[in-house]
Length: 378
Ligand SMILES: [Zn+2]
Image (cartoon, rainbow, N blue to C red):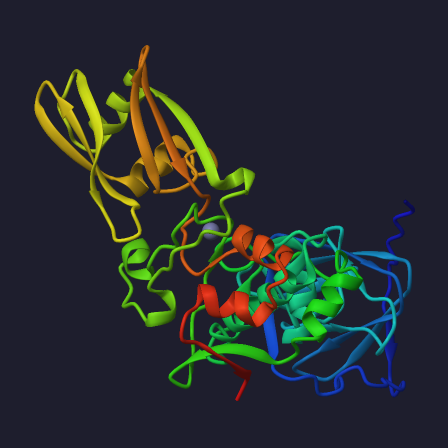
């Protein structure tokens, strides 16, 4: 690909800037941090893009189909070598092809702040509905049944709305700690339909938005937010039986751990043991998930939290706390379990199978979040 660095910015004295700042009203807006404290940003334009210096309102034009480097500089921001004050805003004319940053396509307005002398925050401002176009295809496979995608759209919309907070510099990040978001490049027609046909719908309990957690597969019973994270639990997040995800290939897992590795693990938490005699699930929550495991050792019993053990052995292998067996095998132990993820809220595999059985999305949502009302925001 041709990467052209345009050396100078054209200053626009009084050029028309149609619709650059005033997009059509499209419900609530959300600010997504797509880079934090980044030493530089490579921007590729696929249309004319304007750079607006917030403090002065001065506008500059970036050429189309060009590459630019944006860096922190002397307390401000250098764009193609030109010094501007922080923050700056990148806007493209309404309806035009937009901006690529780090290989991802973004359709919203981009605001860049110099947060330190060496780092830039890049925050995309867009409507919540457009944001969902970028969340849905990552959080659920776009080829899944439409009713499952619609259920995910409502859950993701509700989840994101809870984080909108004007007092902060941005509302959400684009990584796994919130919902994964990779820009606008991956939405297909089904994703658009799932978002558009549920437009504005959210989940409330007693008039308030719930935190609409979701996870890959519960393995037969969803977890309560209390046992997962010690949060006060509302009825919609108390945990329900789930027969629907049983056919999922993710409903069962097993993982092997050597005795020496397990010994190292309990020693790192302060045990002086030299030998493990047995391992078993010691305490379970209401959903059947393990809370603590008990290691019998030559120095007595050692109880450890299942979350610590999962972290040590790897959450992608040790997929859930729903342990169904601990089997001594040659040189170590085999752990077997069901489900994938924290287990709180909607089980995505179950949602898929409910949709395949013809259940509409509202029924899916009411199964996983009992007692919620599905309503418009506001
Ligand atoms: Zn399930």
